Amino acid sequence: MPEQKKIICRIVVEILGKPEQHVVNTLKLLLKKLKEDEKGVKITKGTVHKPKKEENFFSAFAEIEIEIDDLSVLSNICFDYMPSSVEIIEPESMELKSVKLSDFVNDLMARLHDVDMRLKSITTQNLALDDNCFSLLKNIVVLSLKQKQKTLREMEADVGIPENQLQVFVKRFVEEGFVEKKGDKYALK
Image (cartoon, rainbow, N blue to C red):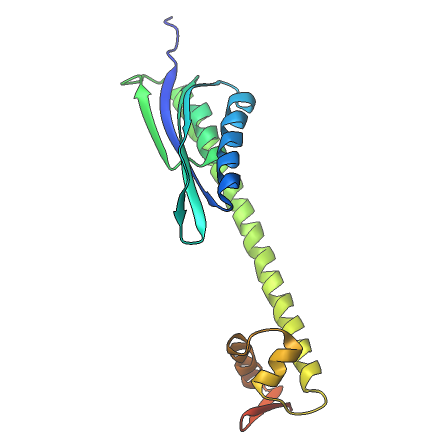
């Protein structure tokens, strides 16, 4: 049986952040982690390109040429490092037994299911946080209006949210019927 050839790939990993030195250090750390932690991976070339300023952030990328044992390793790299680009340089073509291909696809699906479950969990947590924040804001508005009617600007000082953002919430409180608008002032019902 012929020895399985290594797969040679070029991947590009991009990072956006600030400050500039943090972006560079993070890319270098990523290269080090890839080199030391990933089994079945050999880095043959790695170049961290100088960051460019984009609005208030810096973006930089690293071009990394790697030698890997099989497609499952490539799949792990894709999930763990989220490269923006993957180019398989060698071999030009591959022959895979159906068992190997099935293993690869099943590993890929397991990772996708894991990501899906994490996303659903985070979405549920965010919805709960949104509800709790809305309830807290409602309580603060009630406390602000407990003594007297106030304008949005007066409530802004109590609540700590800019008038233009607070207006959206107070409008909803009016629609829910526990706050009423009287001219340019608001009061509890």
